[in-house]
Length: 352
Image 1 (spheres, rainbow, N blue to C red):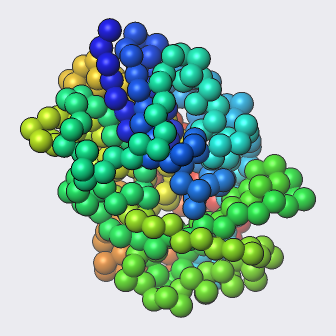
Image 2: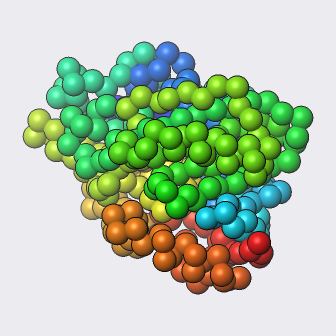
């Protein structure tokens, strides 16, 4: 029985662990946090994602549908225009260690499959060169190790807030600002609501206050505390393998660039990435083929995102979007999300 080590007990790492354990490997997952659920500065949280459950189950071998809820409201505030999307095929899921969270339920499945877990065991500059050939690194965006791995990335300022409410509607609201580039959205599931604000470190400090005020004015949500997540990064390169001390290591999830940089949908992609990592352990050739298949459109989206940011194309692009009722460029860009989605999951129904 071959031993496999996975670093990171997030969605990619857990999915890879479950699949490898089912294939007869002895799997150990190392997690830097003391408990399951990721960094406490970022969880609990609610995430929205497009997903096709039947295709996902057939691919990763795990039925995740019970851990998601359908959206009731899906909209965006774009340059002070309110854009309403059809909420079909977009779902929300909780991340963290609660019994309702996707992480927790994948963890329980992994335990049942015999996966071993070692908590309080971070990947550091001191032990990174001790990784075994074929190990999987499935760490997220909130880690300083990307610099040591020489992963192309952009440092971010990421703020997170969470609260409980009596409103049981499942919603997702995104904000697009004319002043700065980044991601900013709120999402709720069964009364748990979280907000994420991430922007490049070069952005003006005043921007955080502007977004918080916008959330309050347009949606009426106020949060008691905003927490800065240290070491947040935005990965800029798509890659499945990384050479470390002349050993080939498999990358999965955010650290591999396996996510859509434009809309920042990551849950769907993370699950698929974990499966690809497991395939790669068995066959590097097949794993690379799967990786290439899912990311064939993604490289263009990374380029578009960079041009959008550097050349301020949003000053032309965004106003054009909000004048349309059905945007082919948005619908077609779904093909760049490296997971399983429905073609019309970003269909615009109203602009005000």
